[in-house]
Image (tube, rainbow, N blue to C red; front, side, top):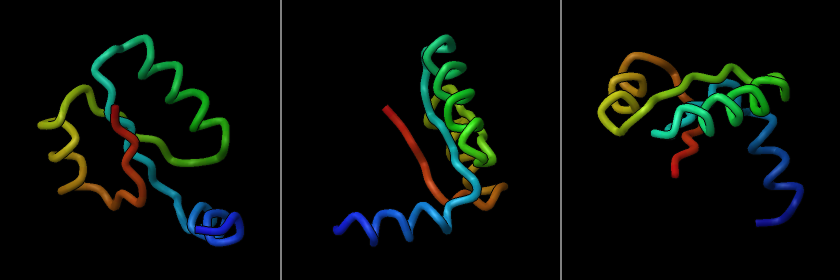
Length: 64
């Protein structure tokens, strides 16, 4: 994937789901991603993430 292709993908991403079980790391990442003008949703585990994926329009999932 070229840099241009990557940047075009990021331009279409609006809703990001962050999946992280460590609350401190999740909060830190949430703030950083949100400050980049994305709508950020967080989940503490896979079950929570699947529930959010089913109910929200998620463009990108970031998980550890």
